[in-house]
Image (cartoon, rainbow, N blue to C red; front, side, top):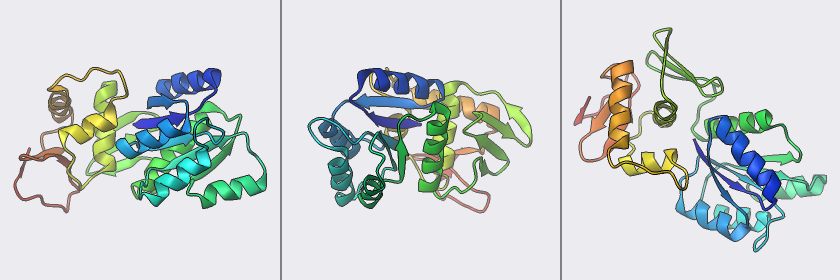
Length: 228
C-alpha cells in the first residue's frame, strides 16, 4: 500500500517513514506543502499523512486545493494544532482523519488501513473475495481456511487487487500502487508476481483482461473477454 507522507520535521519524518515501512506501507516522503500537492495530483496514493505547518504551502491550503481539484485520496492530518477550532477547520477542508501529535505508530497504521478500507467501500477489517481472506493488519492470507505463504510483494499486489475487486487495473496502475520512489521495477515484475499468485491461489483467482490488465472477480461476476 503506497502512501504519501508530508512532514517537514526531519527526525519525525524519518521515524514515521521507517516505522510505517516496517508495518507494510510503501512511503514517499515530502517536506513541504507544494511538493505534497504536486505528488497528490500526480500519483494514485492509497492515502496521505499530512502535517499542517509545512513550508511553501500550509497543509490546510494543500487540502483545500486538492479537494477543489476533485482528488479523493484519503487524507489523515497529523499535527500539533490541537485546538477544537483547528480540528474543525481541518475536517471542513476535507481531511478524513485529524490526529494530534504525538501518535503511536501502530495506531497511525491502523487509522490508515481504516481510511483505505472506507475509501474502497470495505467495512470489514479482512478482505474476502471468493474463498480468499486477506488480513491487512496481520498481513496474512488464507484460501479455503488454509494459510497461504506469500512474499511481501505478492501480498501487496493481492491486497491492491482485492481492494479493487471488480475493476480492471493495468500493469502501470499496479506499479504505481506498489512501488515507492527509488525502487527498481523490472519490466515483467507484475507478470511474475501474478504468475506466482495464481500458482498459490489457483488459476481462476486473477483474470487477465486482454490488452487492458488484471482483475479479481467476485463469484457472481462475469467478465467477457477475460482469461485466467
